[in-house]
Image 1 (tube, helix red, strand yellow):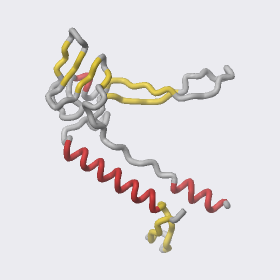
Image 2 (image 1 turned 30 degrees about the horizontal axis):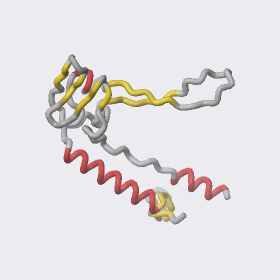
Image 3 (image 1 turned 120 degrees about the vertical axis):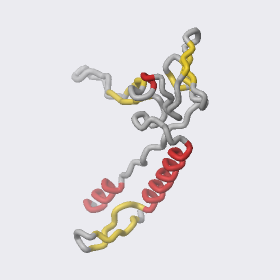
Amino acid sequence: METVKVYSIETKKVVEIHTAFCVENYARKSLAGLLFEKNHPNYCRKCGGSGLITYWDDPSAAGVGLSGGQMEYADPCPVCIEKDVCPQCGGQMIFTESDCVSECGCGYKMVYGEPVEGTYEERPSAPECWCFDYNLYAEVK
């Protein structure tokens, strides 16, 4: 795997840090993030514009003999959704009690507390980088 060579000011040597794929992937995701911010300047920074805070947990009890697994949970964002603010545009959400729908003029829509697929765009997250692990592995070989 080819890595990108960078001059280190601290060591005054050329070091290999990230792979070319990693650098390209990071640039692509950064550009996508900037484009999202341009299109949604008032998006909620806490939830990334989705309206949900997601987290993972391993529900299997320790010592029971069950294999570990991951469950994904999602809670309404306390910064926007719980205050009836649209996570995409920062506008006021309108709640219709008869059908449990919250909508905003920008098109964002939630039904029973879940965002409707296709009515929102989430800010792209930074890509994962495994270059450090790869470089450690390469040194061990």
